[in-house]
Image (cartoon, rainbow, N blue to C red; front, side, top):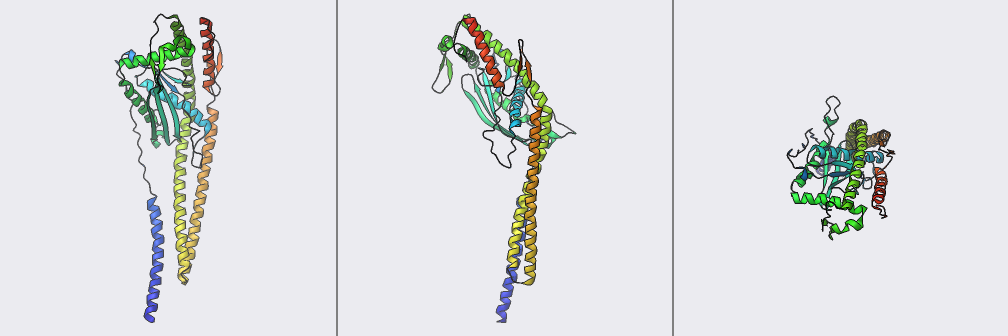
Length: 409
């Protein structure tokens, strides 16, 4: 009997030790499993520069459409740092930054930021913002030519180094310049593979599509479209065709107006740059701090749960010392879980701070006024609306010159 009692006591002590070691194991497992290491660098992809001896005939004009802010696909949630007003401003800022990179590569003709894809141009670039919080920028880019041929659709993502926002040693250029350089490099690589005949065809199709939008009855016969949507030339008008000459004059006026819009976009980007960089620097720190708070909160929740489990096991053992230790474990576990909830509240406070930054940014990016030759245009809200009015004016001019009464475009 005595022997069996000793065996039972030994088993209970072994069980208690096992419970204790289980709690310790869980705690260290959580702590070791949640340790992360980040390695960041200030290096980014350099911009590829075209050979300075490239023939002008191989240069294609590029239109970069204002980026889609991605608000329709942004997931709402506590961790989602999306401010609609700021995203709208970013959609223009990023288009301007990409256009600057393309122009700097010296591999293109005129590179313009355009309000819509309706501007018939040799190459059109459209983008969608997937993520932008100061720490990470992710965009999806689609490049299409005037034939309707898609060059590529590709997602680009980059994480900013904290050196990008170092006030003591600020880096030149955009914090995510590497993304814009990679897009420009991919586009240049594709264009370099095109033959002279293909490039000439693209430029002619651009002109014919523009002409057809003003006078379908005069230019439909020169352009055909396959079942897959790809355009091709079926014939060409004579160089001295009077209708073609009028269309070319109208197209020059359209380019002049779009060039005027470049002043707006450029001024907009410069005005936005300082407060936007400040917002991204603050957002960068807030995002990192919030992630660290959530990590600690998660750790404390798991550790607290483990401590409570161990405390329940010890408290239920019946032994006085073990029961006392169990009560301590329960108290410690409860404290850790409460600490986790407090940290989540702190993280929410950081989110609110970001919202305030987003609201203040809205006041910094008011629309600009563009001076035209015969009028002053206030570009409020969407530039697309203003450009639509301009195309209606061009249609009126064309109809007046040709005596046509075709419907507006």
